[in-house]
Amino acid sequence: YHDMNDPRLPPGPLKLPFIGRIHDLPIQLMWLKFKEWAEIHGKENGFYMTDMLGAKFLVVSDEKVAEDLLVKRARYNSDRPVIRSLFDSKSTHGSMEYLPLMGKNQYWARQRKLSHAYLTEASNANYYGVMYHETKRWLARLMEDPDSFQFSLEDMASKVMCQLTWDDPSLSEYCTKSAWGLLTQMSPAGPITNVLTPLWHLPFFMNPWKQAERKRHDEQQAWWMERFLTVKNNMAMGQQRPCWTRQYIEKSEKRSNMSGDYEASCVLGMLALVGIFTVAGPLSYYLVTMTHHPAWQAAVQTEIDDVCEGRMPTLEDMPRLPVLRACIKETMRWKPNVPTGVAHETEADDVYKGYFIPKGTRILPLDWAFLRNPERYPDPDNFRPERWLQPGWPTYQEPLTQYPTIKGMSSFGWGQRQCLGMTLTQDELVVACGALSWCFNLKPKTDSLTGEQLPVPLDKSNSLLIIKPDPFQMAFEPRSEQRKREALRLWRDSEAKDFTQRADYAGKVAKPDEVTSAVPRPLSARPLPSPSFCSEML
Ligand code: HEM
Image (cartoon, rainbow, N blue to C red; front, side, top):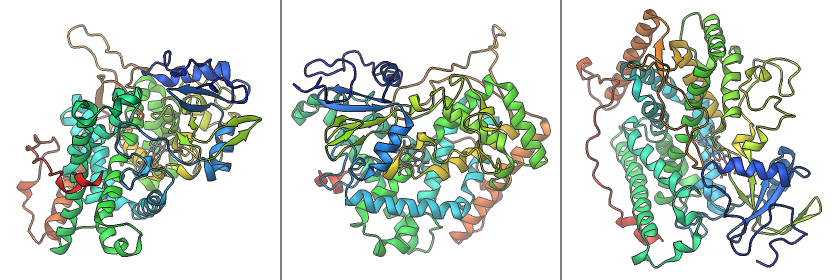
């Protein structure tokens, strides 16, 4: 630790021997502290260095610096740091499991290529209509059971991913739980072993963290494999409709360089997981911002009514809905859901602006700081969608048929590791937020006892890598009886059509009385998947 305060290194808060600067870094809402330090130590350069238990962090608070380091110097700044509480998070030893966490290795290169191709193809095929179907289901659920909106919102995002990946929306609840398990396990605010990393190395028999992770990991891998094999079996029987897994088995199995079913089941499973909380985050914050800004809500509603003349908006309407896009984008700017950004790790010693950046440094592109830069975003602490709509604001861009777009936002990361889900996110948010504003007035809820409005908190969230607001209550008021009836009709029609199409595919005839309710039935107990086939992996 002798070089921790070495003057050749970028400046930063004074570090203590061994622990560096961990003692006053709160694990809760840590991006606030990171930005506070940026205002002191990174003011001049747009970056500063800190040290946590021997790991060096270069915290970047200026987008220009992120561009220099993560885009222009991407060749050696695109690795990932190891996540202690996962087994082989970087796939250094061939586990091949978590694409977004992989080191810059052969598995990452081929899985990224495949994921990119599938996401592009799905978007060209309009995601097979899945987003409309699931959005209509969600509207119906919100009418039947508005108080469960936080559950049904995540479930909607999960159903979209489960359908795209395996053509089976009934998997959504399990998939969300599985995604939550991985998200907590990989976050600094998750298991203590991500911060006090030496604890992870206790022997297995006396190591509760390793034991718990073994169980989580094995169940997840077994489930991914079970999903993969189910699609394969269905295909053999001629009963599998299009989805990414079928596409892989049909077209990519031979052509892609995947090592076999295990790797394929992982890249597909991971794709399903990664699209749940990422999309659910901005969607939850859209509810928050709309309840707090009724005037903007009204502006979105007016725009939708003018453009769509009473129909629910579709992706074809997107060019003519700039106010909706501005409110979505401003929501993501105001309440970013990956506020710390995702770290890259450097693979070579470097010198930047005269400072030494040693190999193995973790570069943290601090999205919270980028999005609150007052020069680029005047009045950064307030929700101001007009910054995307009116000339004179630094972020204004024409034509409004194309801009604002969330694609390319700093929130999606940088360079060779930039997010692959930007188009999917934009499309899903436009469809879902558009449908919400078409159907409901989003309002605070009134307490039935006191008659007072219940607060919708602005700053209460968890502190995982991908955050979401803490549970709160709000009201979904259909904009009119007629809109309510129309939304319910849309769902009934969509559900009946989906049922018939599935039944036709399976060679059966649909019976209308088998059509299910929008409110989920309790999940039957799932049989625990067997972990045996993959336990020898690690
Ligand atoms: C608002 C929504 C989302 C946000 C804010 C977001 C953010 C990010 C960020 C910050 C990264 C890391 C970038 C970097 O290291 O520089 C990332 C990577 C990734 N994202 Fe997203 N994401 C979102 C939605 C999605 C969706 C819907 C999908 C796919 C279905 C997706 C797939 C991926 C993948 C596969 C990677 C890994 C790329 C790599 O490591 O090479 N993301 N995302």
